[in-house]
Amino acid sequence: MTSPALTRLAAARVQGVPAGLVSICSAHPLVIEAALLQARDDGTEVLIEATCNQVNQEGGYTGMTPAAFRDFVHGIADHVGFARERVVLGGDHLGPNPWKHLPADEAMARAERMIAGYAEAGYVKLHLDASMGCAGEPAALDDTQTAGRAARLAAAAEHAAPGQAVYVIGTEVPTPGGALEALDHLQPTEADAVLATYAVHADAFRDVAKGDAWRRVLAIVVQPGVEFGHENVAVYAPERALALSASLDAMPGLVFEAHSTDYQPEASLRRLVQDGYPILKVGPGLTFALREALYGLDAIDGILHPGHDRLVDTMETVMLAEPKHWRSHYPGTFDEQRLLRHYSYSDRIRYYWPVPAAQAAVDALLGRLGDSPIPETLVSQHLPRLHERVMLGAIPPLARTLLIESVRDVLRIYGRACRPSATPSTKERQA
Image (cartoon, rainbow, N blue to C red; front, side, top):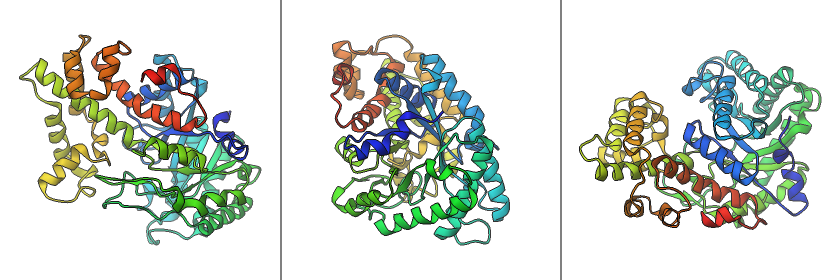
């Protein structure tokens, strides 16, 4: 069943009461747990998305197929008492990217098997991204080729689960994982370009994806001018995107999807929702908050239990031992790279938390801190954003609770931005 929260976005905008939906793009179990707990308390659905590189029929870098990732999320939902039917699963950048080193026919055949697997596993929000060239092709394809391949992917999903999915098209997105250069501002997508994308996809769907699949296209990915680099953030400037936002009037029933909204101020997120970008994707911003809390707990543990190996040192060793996830992203001297490895907004460290040595170090840290209350003064020193709530008794000063709350604090910002006319709840005011 398609999510009501997704399908009402365009109508809400037209009616002048815009509402948004945050898309959780993370496979970290604590992030997913935090998202489910926040949605449970807010009384909302939760949208959790996996990417083609992360989850596919060959396992991706998480080692999970679409069905396995679904079961992973549902298991966490069962654990925290969140109804499975309120979990909305999505697939992001679904296309040939994991196999673009292969000839196009083979890469697309694998991409079609992948999206069929997502559809069969019950994922209802599918972002079609066939913009990249495969072996022997240009790095980026033209609109006609991209749209034709996107329609092929939609047809494969429709064959696997007829009438189930809603689709997101368009591929003009920020660099995955953050920009490599310093940022000042970004040029939003030109209105003419997005209208051309819309038209060429409409033609391709009519030719390839039969039935009513085109009527279930709900959003187009565009660049509204938001991004983050290693050390700074390009904040949304509404005046730069006026023409882009206005172009939605020529595409009835659609909204825009904004990628890389991580680290945007709450006012900017709220304005994005109001301006027609109600699907707000966030991923590294959540694991960045988790890493901040873990390092804060690591410092506290060093005071309470001196003499143990520090988590920050273990993570440095783990990342140096296998640099493939950060080396091509982090420039500079060794000392400059070391700073980025741990503290970059790009948060490439997120790829290393599943490594056994990293998992063991986190488990050991949480085991030492256990269920013993952490002194308020140490929370004030190393996790100051949580101190007032601990002091007032709103949350217990327990290590795992403090980790979850640190992630939920980011999600609370998104939740308020997605409900622009809502009054903060009592729990939100306490937070």
